[in-house]
Length: 191
Image 1 (cartoon, one colour):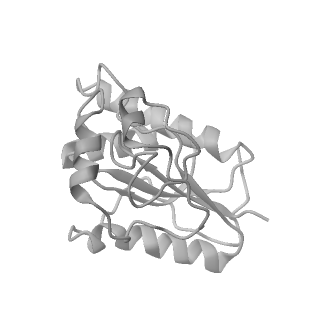
Image 2 (cartoon, one colour):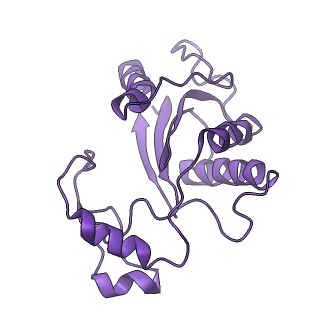
């Protein structure tokens, strides 16, 4: 029984389908990236973010993109979270970093990819109200979603999300839209 989801999605240009560290992509859809080789599909379910890689190659790949890679400012992060708060979904944890977002989303009957699409749309709307990203989406396609089936899984994911900014040398984030996880009521009122 799914209690929640740990969803990770990235800003445009952060994690590329033919990323030197590997990716979960099956193909390279962006014409400008095809010269750098095929998708670097990996099968592991564990994070590969800490793997060593050729930073110069990645910089060349990013410079070939149609738009500059997106890095969110602190003000943009606040607008992103405002967009999330305007959505109908319950968040148990939220961290918006310069190049990616981590969320723990309460159980919903909707497909998690649809939910993430709604959250990205709500965040983009909030950003555009302030004049940001009017010519393209600030988000990469897809994302990574982990199904959390036990209270221990949810608690572990929440701790991971809450500590993610600290691991990057930033302050812990606290957002008013985050609702504490209660395993006794975790599936009540699912959309």
